[in-house]
Every structure is written in structure tokens, then in C-alpha cells.
Amino acid sequence: MNGKRTVADAIAATLKAYGAEFAFGIPGNDVLELIRACEEAGIRFVLAKSEPSAAFMADAVWQVSGRPAVLIPALGPGLANAISGIAGALQERSAIVVLAGEMTTRLMGIYTHQVFDHVALAAPVTKLAATLNPGRAAQQTAKALDVALTYPAGPVLLNCPADLSRADSGEPAQAPPRRLPTTLDEAATQTGRALIRAARRPLALVGRGALRAGVAEPLLAFVEAWGMPVLTTYKAKGALDERHRLALGSLGLSPIVDAVTTELVGAADLLVLVGFDPIELRDAWIDAWPADRAVLSLDWGPLPHRMFPAGTEVHGELPSLLARLTGGPPVATWPAETLGAHRSKVAEIARPRMPAAGISPAALFKAVSDRVRPDWLLTVDVGAHRILANHAILCRTPGQLLQSNGLGHMGYALPAAIGAALAKPGSPVVALIGDGSLLMSLGDLAVAAEHALPIVVVVLDDQALALIKLKQAKMQMAPRAVDFAGPRFDILAKGFGIDGTRVESQAEFERAFDAALETKRPTVIDAIVDPSEYWEQM
Image (cartoon, rainbow, N blue to C red; front, side):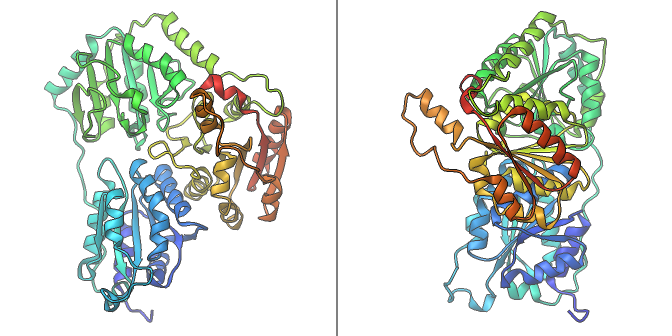
């Protein structure tokens, strides 16, 4: 650019000052200046194969790193395609900055090809959507980032006409604000501790708010000090190591498991909600406990809802809140047989069955769980396998199992695995995907190959939309629009230049899985599974 500083440079420099490291998208003429500016500012642009996948990659970068990620869709169909992924970011609470390409201003109001109102389209699925102000681009970008990062996080959009992005700018980059931590005063601390001390069967319900940096250690100290057992939402798995004596598993989507879980919730005389966001819960959790139940809600900020009674609410720096409320001696007097019975009932639901042919999904997930190390990252796609995986796989660290559990978007796991592998290079990444979901994101295998990412893609291959088929059966309906002829995913993988293998027994799967982890190469394992056990598991 011959040393010229443009509006796009001011935007990119501000994004970099806020910690952005990656941008994702598919170029069009209208976004070339934005891509150039990001790359020259040190923000790596990753060429995706579809716009929804680009958004899922950006989502995973935020989930893994806590840094905002950038999505750059071209005008018209580019943004239209990306909208489902942007909606996912809103419901997954992910800080993504969308820099949408737009026609030049001299064509506005006259030109109609590929034209619609980008801001109006994006407004319902973003926290902020606005047209770029070229005279205040850095300030506007900083404002958008502040909105994106304010709890709960979410996507924002700036609509960027191509001529405005290319215009000269002398505006300096904007830095993030410096915020001092907030915590409880002594009187509020004593009130909270008194509420806990009065309980004999306190139960912690932990949600995705607990995944933010710095929460894990004070959460562990808090529940250990009070002897308080813990249930987590699916996204919050690993907020407490699921092998810990106080960890009781996950809640939120399986009607069969939740029937067991709600018995335990009903027996508690105090519920302590820690970052417990109801966006992950199915409608059975509406009014999940009576209004007179003692509840203490701890979170970074308010989540306006009436899903269930929130009781006494405390907002602030969650690690500090937990530390201030940590006391002792332990108050919990849960009967050991009650907690043991809960664990046994869930284990019985999620146990492997003997399949007539192929592999038990539960046995496959148990094999993965037995091997999981703290440095692993896993992603799981939407479907029957995801519900089972959340009850069969024990996570060791916060946010170890990435998934779309707000919007529940099929096609998430493979692009999320790519984003996770980019954000945390060197870590083993395992993507657990149903065959229907992989067909929605098959092109992303090319991205994994291009970047030589050490992702092991495990395809649970049953040639059906198993969860919908199961629901049809439980509604006494004939199966319709749920069966399909699937490809040989192992052969397709080789066509992308990555390793592929097909397995039909548990022993074959475990050998192939161990070998794939050892190679540290992108690998697809096409696992032929028997879905019949899902009937008893969900």
C-alpha cells in the first residue's frame, strides 16, 4: 500500500490491541483490504471452505483462548451464509467481530445485484450491528469489542463498504479499557456464608460462566471447603475435574438422565449457581425448583431470565466471589448412599450395550474417556451421540469438550476442531462427529489437511439421523426423512490427502485411535456403530 494507512489498518490495529490473533472467511472483492490489513497487523487469516464453518472456527478460538476472533464474510451471499454461524456465536456466548463486506457507497440506493440490508439481517443475532464510520473506525471497533466482550460475550458486526475500508486514515489504534476487579464487601460476604452454613445438603450447579480464566482453582477450593457436590451443564464439563469425588456429572438435555438429576436437585436444601446460564437447558428445566428453595447465584453479571428462581444474586469477578465465600468447616451432610446411587444410576444409563453388529457408541466413548489427558481438546457434534458423549466422557479441564449447546448447530465439530487446533498448537484434538453432521462440513477436511493439523476425526457412522429417528419411534411414528446412504468416509479422507481408516469392532477402533494419536497427522476413523442402545440412554 506504499506506506499509506487506511481505515482497514485502523480497524485491524485495534483488533490486535484487544488480542485478536485469527480471522476466518472466504474472500470477495469487497473484503480484500480488510484481509490485507489484518494479516499485516499480525492477525492470521484462515481461508475456510464455507462461511458457517468460518464462524464455528472463530467460535472455537474464543472458547479455547479467551481472545476475540474475527469473521470476514463477503457481501450478499457471504454474509447470508455466515448468519447461522453468527447466530451460533450469540447463543454460545462467543466474542466474534464480524467485518462484513459491502458495496461501495457510490452504488448505494441504485445497485441491486447481491444487495440487501446487512445490518437489519444481522441485528437479531448480534449484540451490536452497525455501518462503519470511517472517520471513527478505530473508536467504533473498540466500542464493538467492548460490547462483544461484556458478559455474556457475543458477536458484533460492522458493515464495511469497500471504498470506506480503503480510505486514508490517521486514526491511532484503540486499546481495551483497564477495569479494576469488583468483589463482595464484608457484610455481603457474611450474608452469603451464612446462607451456605445454614444448609445441610447444598448442591452446586455450574454453567459455562465458570469456564472463564481463573475460575477453576477458586471453584475447586470453594466446593472442597464446603463439601459441596457439583453438577455441570454440558459446556461446563471439566470446570471441576470429573474424576473428583465431588463431581456428579452433567445435566441439561437427556430426559432420562435429567429424571435422575432432578431427584437430586429436589433433595438439595440450597442450590449454589455458579455461572449457570440457562441457554444450555431444555424446556424441562423451566421452574425446575420452587420459588421458596434457597438459591445463591454467583456470576460475572446479570443474565435476565425467568427460567427458574435465581434467589440471592451476586455479580462480580467470579474468582474473587468464590474466594470470599470459601469457608469451613464443611457443612454438607449428603448421605453417601444418595450420591452413590446418583452416580450408579447415570452410569447404568450410559453403559455400553452388546451391539448386534458394529460398535457400541458408549463403548467407543468410554475408550476415548479412558485415554483423555488434561492437554487434550475434544469437540462433539449435534445428535444422539452428543448427548451420550456428555455422560460417558469424563473431562479433566474446563471447556475440554467443545460443542454447540446453545444453538445446537449440526456441522460444528470439525470446524471447531480446526479452530481449537489453531488456537492451541501442539495439543491433541479429537472431533466426535455423526455421519450426518460430517456431511455438512466435509470440505473442512481440506482445511485440516492444508494446515497439517493433528486432528483425529471419529465418525459415528450409522447412516441415519439417529436422534430424530429415535424421537419418531418414541412418538410412535414411522421413520421418515432420517435414513440416508452414506459414503466411505475413510476413502474420502484419503482424497483430501489425509489418513483414513474404517473400523467395525471395538478392538479395531481402539487400535486405530491409538495409532492416529501417535502419528499427529489429520486422520479420519470411519467407525460403524449400532445406534440401538440410544433408545435406553435418551
